[in-house]
Image (cartoon, rainbow over all chains, first blue to last red):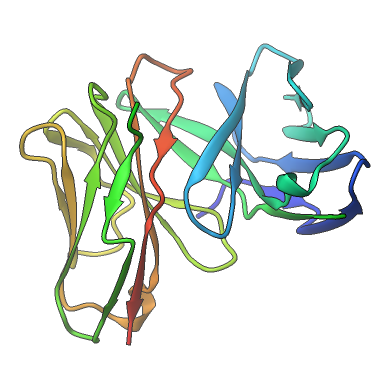
Length: 113
Length: 115
């Protein structure tokens, strides 16, 4: 079963615009991670935010976390065609020393040139 | 350095056949994970290895699925009597397993199609 939901399921914007994706989850977490996936294959790790952090930046990426609302957002600024991909949030289920990731269904982002 | 590799990249088989999917983790990574991703969905956890042992296999859907990691490096996911519902992309990930903020690095996946 999947932990959370991304919103929207699909997003199409013009190159240069900002893209915002949201993620909601259900249980308490240690951290939340965002991944990018191109063409339905391997996932690329983008950023990890800990449960005691509220905001984190990495290049053109900005992630926020609101543990009281059990939600996170990923902002991509000045989007490029190469940003076209599916984006997933993943929360951890840390049991038996294993950081088992629980993914949402993803947001499919399309950047139009 | 080399990332996680998976072979084959694509596998087409017939219902009822046996398949093996291979994962080569990043050198030195002690933790290895298998996930399964169906079309339009996010990956779902299958099994986790710490070294040679399966520390958590709670995600394996049934006893037709089995995975091994005999020398603590390469892992093989084995599926017996395949069914059409097993069709999915099977993803492998590895990590250093340094604790609660560990990053998992994913391979390109194996796309399994059961006819």
